[in-house]
Image (cartoon, rainbow over all chains, first blue to last red; front, side, top):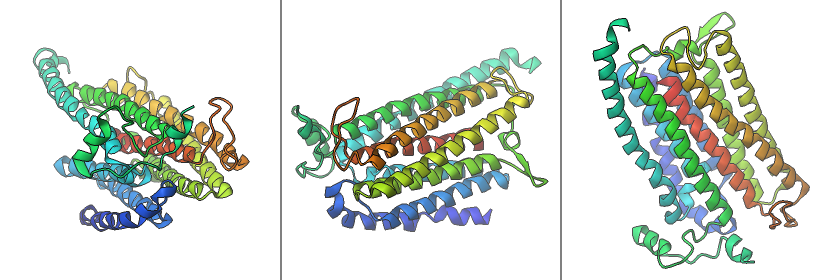
Length: 133
Length: 240
């Protein structure tokens, strides 16, 4: 468990490293997306570490809020690394980044609606169909 | 026609930073995506639409799981394997995750070598990516076979809520289809790279547009998206 906690704090330095890489790659941007191979290897390594962490969450059978928050944290970090570095979104023009990244954020509204809806359905099932279940 | 204007991605003027820049880019009858070629913009927009499809699948899974009064099967046990006499939960899924991440890594490097016009390395890395993808799909085939033998059906399973099967087959099946299409896409483009199509700007047989190494990056976008979706499926379906 302590192991997992240590890794959860880990990603910070690597994100700073990416920020640091940005100015240098801006000059080479002219020939398409050109970034040092090392950057990809570092991200690759972090994706491995994060995946191992989320696997360990299950392996050690963590439960409750700790489990959910760790799973979501690792998920978001991995997704962020893939989109920002592997898919080069970090270097794209803001007009594209916002056009692509904002709409999925609206899905969260949909999530909220469906959470409320399924809570309601669940309540009805408990009230009217529970005895057999 | 206006091909040069549309495919030549790099001549965009620098604009004002931040939100003002976005408004400037989007307003007054201009191309919104200044330094992004049509091919890349279209791939991004397609991926956005695909995001919504997968969101809908995952949302319907969330809704069924939250609203059922029957306990959900314990995925940790369902996807456990016995390896060398040891019972390890979720091990197959973990291996599949690592394989897909590795394929993303090789893809990212293929894009890099593509822009350096290193034909052989680009093609080799793309084929390695395709091989990882094919391995992933075969492991998924193994996983499906195992579960079907154990009695998982879209309408029921031995361990709990009946909707487990339908959610599982729909979500992983749709993702597996994406991986399969990606493998085919990768092999097709790798063949063109190896043949030198993008060095001589040979025209495509279907679009009759000149080929550029940017297609490697566009293929990569699709491939990374497949990996991205797996990140969400892994977290929300397998681990939750």
